[in-house]
Length: 278
Image (cartoon, rainbow, N blue to C red; front, side):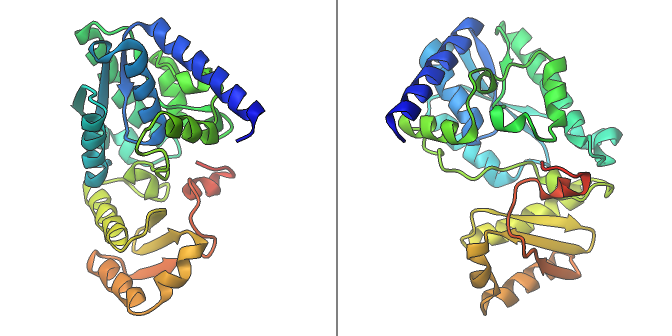
């Protein structure tokens, strides 16, 4: 990072501090990703732990390993953490799995977090939305607007690269963590989202995670598992005996066909049918 970039990042950091200070107290919608972790870290630094609450929505769409990561991060950061049960999977508008699915998920989450903030006498709710999400298909942002949920990273003008750089400078342990989305994002639009399917995807991805892959998805197309990994990981995935182990594991989980996407991992590939990215 050159001097001018560092100056810009420092200015944005100060702007972020000011935005969070204005809130006086805050519930942070905490997913365990680098974005919401940065919001939480800055809030703790600016407001202190007595004025900050990390809140995580817990449902079948959240992988168990991500829930454990949330708990560990909150503990390391000495952040008060509230686990909030959400029931988006029970909402027919969500489970129908239209391209607007995330709107219904975030509406469920922000409804509960807004109620939590009111119950605790907290000034408002903030999420990890940032500049890179503005030109993307993000129906969840509409829900955030409707529930007056702040996006201080976006308001401060921070993009993903700047967020990672700032998180690194602040000593945030997950600053290099790959972007993750809920398990429902792996289900092709039009295929109903069920607890059984979410469990199937979670087990499939856990298998790859345990085999050392860190940036990947298992996309669910009914009886087809479409695996995305970084292009640099394809050769390893296709080498024996791992290739056969992957096929065997996926078939045991209920998939009839196991495919490797030759385009490789890309966030939001499920939205390519819409003509945009997730």
